[in-house]
Length: 411
Image (cartoon, rainbow, N blue to C red; front, top):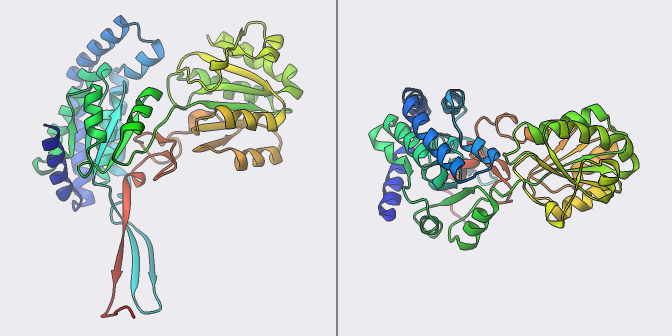
């Protein structure tokens, strides 16, 4: 029963919350080794999941999220080992000061408690979410999507089998991958402390609308690149290609290209040509079509849409003001980028764009925990509370106040 799953998780947190850093590191090193030891089974189960996905007609970019091979599984084990070596946030003193009355007042990081993780398609989340939550002193109840059901079971069993008995229930995988299971999790007031949904727009909306426990949204990634007048066309081309084509099925992939009308005749054709040669379908506004005959006319729904495929919306806009207006209307608060040679316009873009990450003269693909120096992440939060951007170990903690006195009383 779900209530017993939550109860076991809560009991495990009491032990895990006071575990030493060395104890947690040792357990995670064993988990990483177990993933490698169970490679044959995990890949066999994953091949069955992938075959089913292809039979259902799943898009190639989404199959790419699901598929594992020896290299990806090795990287998964490596991510768990890397998490084990990160600084332990639990017990870290955020603030330490002395009040005029002699009281010593501190803020200290502590685990969040029991976390519910709801995700789709990505089996690596099973291992990495388990490791991140564990290192931060939390129990995690994992609810993966049906697409990766076999793979998730194999990974979770490998990880759980490597954990000490008294904290094994800090990692649990729910067998129910249907909507009823999601509802049970997001309404578990008092049993689950935080829910983190990671997946498509429909899943995020369903969780948010039905939740009775706090939710950190990992919403869709409608990421834009604005190419400013005077930008270096070679730089802009490489940034656009990397953002769209390197892994089109991920949340930090580029979904819309904006080009300044004042310089579009110079900038847009070579950028578009490189994208088309890379297999990308372009869907453009009227001004785009006039400059790029290969582009298809964009429908209104193409702007603000997360394609997760080799498809890119393109719009010619009237300068920085036009780009900012477009992003305000269609952005999802994930990642927004500008390619410019003008420092003042770059600075204005940084100030005025409201997103979890703003990038200047680089690919949107850098909005990633590993690339930003945080190590592995549980996902990229687009909500404002309690975190925004890549959620690493620090984001999986809260704080408590500690007040030390010598007999003081309040008057």
